[in-house]
Length: 167
Image (tube, rainbow, N blue to C red; front, side, top):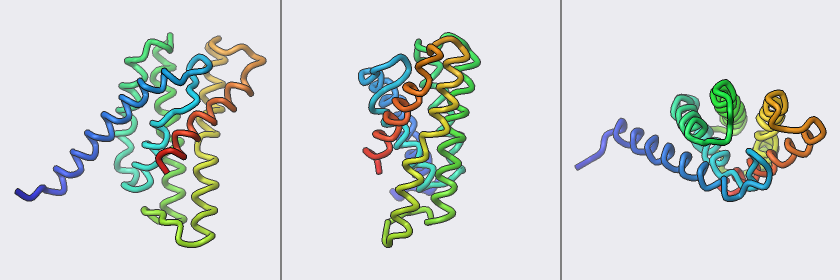
């Protein structure tokens, strides 16, 4: 029996969703600071899915982020549980859009230009979400004022290590 494109897309979405939620849970094993893991694999999955398959998968990524966040006991307020997934998803969707626009949907790193673009994009991808998330955690009183820079750096390392694992 031959599968239809809709069935293949549904299967990809289901596998992604399951991988995202399971690796988000597994990341708690690697937490070295509250809410910050040294290795956050979902960041790599998000960037890969949105780069390879495009922005139409934004709702799937957002739904996976929301489920992972709302089922995690770590964040005390509902607005953080809602806002952080939106920030993460929008951030990585924007980076994926840039990669697709500049290199194409399947970056094969065939030349120096493509390699530099993908390298810079994957290095920059976690920066905005780390700054925004760290700031929101500090506003909510979950991060001491003097620890914001350290938290942002740790957040970047965790997301970047996840991206580099998948890339």
